[in-house]
Amino acid sequence: MDMPRVSHRYVEVDGVRVFYREAGPRDAPTLLLLHGFPTASHQFRRLIDALGTRYHLLAPDYPGFGHTEAPDGFRYDFEALADVAEGFVRAVGATRFAVYAFDFGGPVGFRLAVRHPEWITGLIVQNANAYEEGLSAMARAAIAHRTGEPGAAEAVRELFTLPVTRGQYEQGAADTTLIDPDAWTLDQHHLDRPGRIAAQTALALDYHSNVAQYPVWQRWLREHRPPTLVLWGVGDGFFPEEGARAYLRDVPDAELHVFDSGHFALAERLPEIAPLVARFLDRLAGQGRPGGQRRLRIAVLGASGHLGGAVAREAEARGHAVTPLGRADADAADPAALAAVLGGHDAVVASLKGGDRLVPRAAAALLEALPKAGVERLLFVGGGGSLEYAPGRRFVDSPDFPPQYLETARDQAQALDLLRAATDTPVAWSYASPPPMHLVPGERTGNHRAEARDTPLVDDEGVSRITVGDFAAAVVDAIERGSFVRRRFTAAY
Image (cartoon, rainbow, N blue to C red):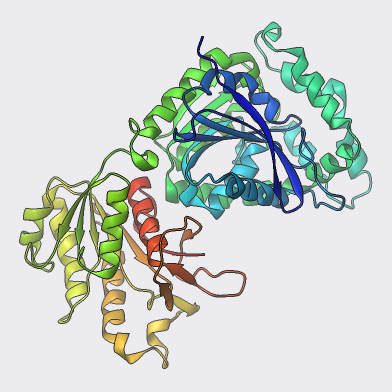
C-alpha cells in the first residue's frame, strides 16, 4: 500500500513557533497548502494522504490557528500572517512552489505572490475570493465591522461559536454524511484555546484590508498569468460562484471546476478534487523538468555579452533549449536576417549594445522580423536610465547622469519608446529595466521582486539593487510565465 510518511514539525519565524505538516520527496514539485478560517493545516490531512507520495507538500498553521504558538503582543492582521508565511517559506528552504489557497489562504497567498512572484509556479484557488462580486450579502455584513466601532468586536465574536463553525461545513453541502464531524470539532477546540478569540476577533475586524487589496491581486494575475486551477463549492454562503468565474477575466486560460458543495468543498469532494490537483501539478512539473515549465526554445541576441550571457545561462540551467546569437549569426538591425535565424523559437531575448543607434534599430527590426518568423514573444533587456526618479523625470535626463553611459542609455530609452508606440504589433514584448545604479555582480538568490512600473523598486533603505544572477532570473521568469506583456518591468530587492 502506497501511503506517505507525514512529518509534524515546528520552525521558528521571528518569535513565532510555526507548526507545519510535511510529506513527500523534496525533489518533487512543491505545493504550499494555505488553510482557511476557522481551521488549520489539519484540513488538508486527507489531501496529504492522497498526494503525499508523489509531491512535496507543506502545510503550516498561521498564528492564532492550530498548533502554532505566537508570543504575547503579536499583531493579528493579514499582513502579519503573510509576514509569517513568508518567513516560513524561507525557513524551510522552499524557492519554487505552487500555492493551494483556501479562504484565508487567499489573502495570505496573494500577498506572498505579490511580494515574491518568482516563487510561484502555479495557483490553486479553492473558495478563496479576490473579487467584489465574490462577496455574498452575508460576507459583506461580516466584514463591514471595523476596529474601534461600538459593538463591532461583539458582533464578530458570534462567528466563533460551535453552531457557526459547524454551519460553515454543512451549509451548501450536497451530502453532509461525507463530512467528518471531527473537522468542526477540532476547529472549535482550537478556537476555544486561551487567547484565540481575541486573535480571531482582530483578524475579522481586519478583513476589509483584503477587499482593499483586490485590485492589486487582480493586477498581479493579469501581469503574471500564473497557471491557475479554480475549484469552487457553489453552495458557499460567503463566496458565491461569481467569485470563481471572475478569475477567468484576469487569467483566461485558468481551469475552472465547480462542485455541488459548500465552502469546505474539499471535505466533501476530495475524491473529485484530489485527481484534479494531481493533474495540475503534473502539468506544472513538465514531466520533471527544472523550474516546473515546459521546455522552451529561446534565442538570445547578445548572448556573448554580460547580461545576455547571464540570461542564457539561467535559461539553460532551467532546461530550456538556448540558441546564442551574435553578430556573426545575424545583423540585429536587419529584419530579413533576423527572420531567417529566429524561426522555430518560442521566444527571443535581445540584450544588445553598440554604436550607430544599434539598440533602437534592433527594436524596430525585431518588431518587423518576429511576425515573419512566427515568433510571438520578445523580451527586450533594456537599461535603467529611462526609469523615473520623479514623475516625468528620467535618470538619463538628469545633469549628473554618468556621461560614459549616456549614449547607450538614450538608445535604450528610444527602444522602449519604439516598443510602446507599436500599438498594433502582434509581438508580445516585454522590456526589462535593471536598477539605474546598482546592478551588481552576484549569483541568483531568488529573493528579488519584479513589478511593471516606470520607477525603481527600492528596499527598506531606499536603495534599488539586484545581482546580475537575480536579474537574469527575473527575465527568464517573465518568459516562462508570459508576464508583463507589452509592459516595462524592473526587478530589485
